[in-house]
Image (tube, rainbow, N blue to C red):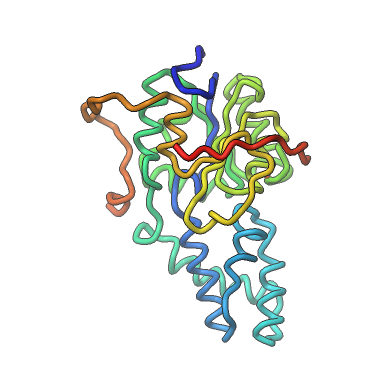
Length: 261
């Protein structure tokens, strides 16, 4: 695929799901906060952002902090059961929406003929649930879930699998991620990496990203180019935007551009 007028050329684009396209990260933040409150402890948002967000293996460390702060003698299994109850409370269409600009970005990339992939650390059941809910499944030529590879992010396996299914070398692909764990996975696979800062993760550093941007609108400008003066007319099959939500082997760090456009 010939690169478009944006400043980042791409033969294909591979997206993370949670925190990048859908705002499930906020729901997890609320669930973990509620778990700490249930146990009588103050939440640790910085620890959660750095060690848990984007890292499905980070919850045991969070549980260890909870036991220390709340002086409770509960096993990881018992705490995960309590957290699962909070997930059921918050992982709902009322709390999980598309992130601003996600729908338009996917629409425009597909209209440009750019092959799209999805590489998630979450299980297939979760991926299919939300792709179906938001009508996103048809946008992707390849999707890979965390339970379909041997190791999850920050291991690059999920990105290698997604690019292989697209039939495009990783070095020709752009990965769009929100977490340091995800950016490390994409960089280790050999992709050009765009890190999107989200509200709950703005304090984090992204040493493996090639560009750090404030939102998906900036991703659009890098991949597609400046927005045209006249907006494109609505087309059938557009995905729903957030206000319509209801019915990661390590890589050598690379210089990062923090794009404020």
